[in-house]
Image (cartoon, rainbow, N blue to C red):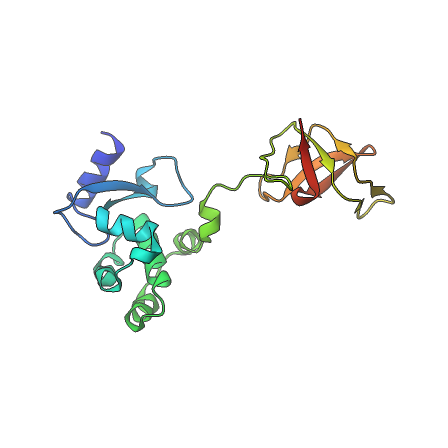
Length: 191
């Protein structure tokens, strides 16, 4: 059974947020996940999907459906209900629902991920060029190296850089024989 078939079975062929069964349904991967895992996806109607993806098209009254779907036992549905209620927090009724909604700690942590983090972060130099492990970069300014007694001079080439996995603004490289962490906005990629 493929992912869409699993979601159709789980949702009884209805949108998992508004229960609409009259409109074409689509698989929606809950950011930041994109591994097509049934536990990280929900089935949405075109109306919900369009409003989730385009804040200008939100019709507040459409989201009163969250009064029911927020009680789903499916974590992905809970995450999207929480995110939409939070997005509509300025409405009085949404705050009441948020006050009632209880999420397990790991589900709440997933729901609270900032929207910027839902887009895959890439390491980029000062000019916006994507950096990869093993690239060579040049420093664009003098950098005082903390914990060492030297300044990395502007124009210094740093070869075979390593990307810092948990921070897209940091890379590692050797300067004057010492491994240091460098902020990506202070380097430019060399060809």
